[in-house]
Image (cartoon, rainbow, N blue to C red; front, side, top):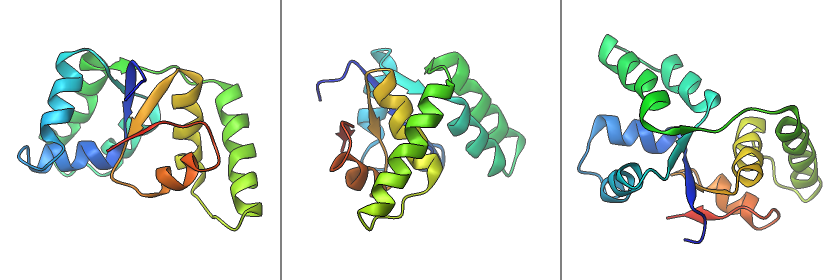
Length: 132
């Protein structure tokens, strides 16, 4: 992994909050301890959307205090839209939010850690570094 920062996708946080013994837990803990773990508004919103308890809500909100928050920008949204269009022309339909997370990570020089295989597809067509 060459990137200094790593944007942690919603899929990883969900698994971490459910079961801290899953295979990526040691990596996630290490990234957090090193101050390399990043989040963004979209990830926090997705976690809040799926929260089923006050504990889930508190865990989601705590990410903004325990991780670097990558700033949103119109440039990242524009890049995400162009990326989604490019991928669609190549026969790959990827959700706009995944394209946005990829664009945001690249804009901030961060890799992305996700359980979602779409990011590997994105990385074949876009300068995105994926972890795990």
